[in-house]
Length: 110
Length: 113
Image (cartoon, rainbow over all chains, first blue to last red; front, side, top):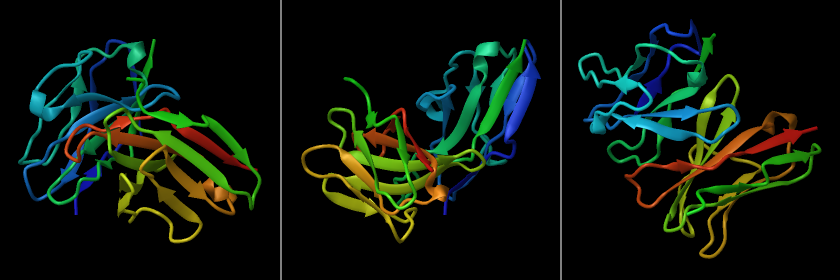
């Protein structure tokens, strides 16, 4: 069964510091992976997807099939990046149920 | 397109009462997913519905919880005889097909007192 693991519940950094939010997945096929962001008490919204290989709000994520990882990175964190971040397998194989990690709360201090 | 709409945003129920949570998917979306969010557990899948059909309810507790997505009207998540442990944020997401991005509503925060 597919699984998404986010090992850190909380990541606390200072403004301007680099950020890496870790995500590992378990899936036997070729996965599609997303990062969602949830700002305080707002809805989840898609931040980026690996297939588009884009950079959104300075964030990037590279799929590493060898390490089964999809870590989210930003070289210089901003206070407005403080939010909950969820790594997700939106669909995989026969399952079309988006599977989420437990989320990592990012706090960026001034 | 107004986006996925959930109501109410906040719901307070006494133990033993029923809670009804509504989700209106985005226009043109026939796939609906319900998730429960707890502070220490992240997003937990509950049920996946497609118009008038329950596709997967493997994440739903066997008792007291039910969901529907009628041909007309919103999807409803019903919790009967609520208990304190049901207090959580419940999110609904919709997608036009089963292999496209899911869009989320703002959630319903249920508090059981």
